[in-house]
Every structure is written in structure tokens, then in C-alpha cells.
Amino acid sequence: MVRLSDLHPTEAEHLRARADAMPVLECERWLTPPPLTESTVAIVSTCGMHRRDDPPFTPLALDYRLLPRGVDWADVVVSHISANFDRSGLADDPNVAMPLDRLEDLAAAGEIGGVSQWHYTFMGAMPQPQSFEETGTEVGRLLADDGVDVALLVPI
Image 1 (cartoon, helix red, strand yellow):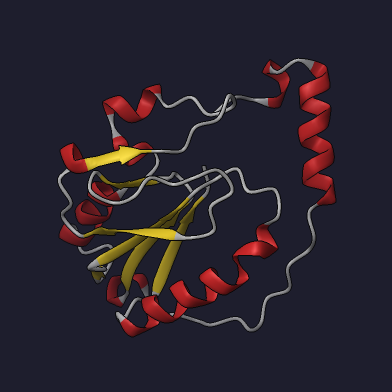
Image 2 (image 1 turned 90 degrees about the vertical axis):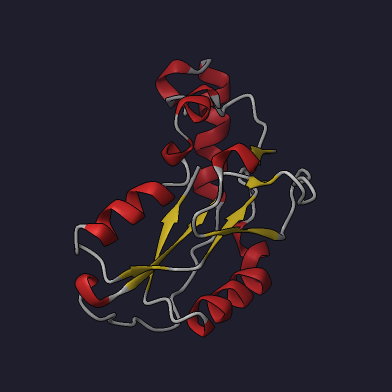
């Protein structure tokens, strides 16, 4: 990911202005999960990853894709494209954006109770996060239905 200080000043100012213009999203209620050693954990990321046979994300897409536990990284592609998104690190290790293998390591070490069967990816670079209210609510219900106690949000 590029740093604002590395961008042309005009582009950096544009991105700062977009961030300042984003609405404040209110939290409905705070939930306290069980201890991590007893919690099932899932990942929700805006990395735009999906399985090869899934339809690619389109610009400003509001839908999501599922990655199953134990997915073969050779079957995963990234359709998130942006001039400000350096994808070179993903070629070496997709865990940079979707740390599924690290979750398995944490479960094996007893640091977390378990790994969810399903993980969710969205397309990043969405200037209006409130647009995700409907699909975000749907994914929240799906996570709860799957017994997920903790969702790690990985913004890209």
C-alpha cells in the first residue's frame, strides 16, 4: 500500500479530502465475545480476492465472495485493481491481505478456539462505505449463523 507521503501532493490532498468527507458510522451495540482461546474466528477483507471460478469484482461492487477454510491459494485470484494498490506482495504471500494460514497457525497453537469454515472478501476502494450497509448486515448474519465469535476486518 502506498503512503500518502509518497504520492504527488495533489493526489495526497485528494485522498485526505475523501477521507474527511466520509460519514461517521454509528455502532448499533457492542458485543463481548468469549475469550479468544474459545472463539471461532473469521476474516472479512476488502482485498478483492476470490476463487478463479467466481465472477470477478467490478469497480464499485457492493457484493462479496466466499473463501472456504483451507482454500488452495493456486485457485485464488485478485480482481482489486487500483493505481494506489501494490499487488506485488500478494504474489509472494496472499496472507498479506487474507491471513488465513496465520489463523490456522493461531488455532494450532491454541491461541484461538477455531477457524471459521467461511471467510468473506469485498472489493476495496469504495468511497461511500455506507453503501455496504445491506451486504454488511447480510454477512454479519451469515457469520453469526456459522458460529463465528470474532471477525477480523482486514482493510486493503
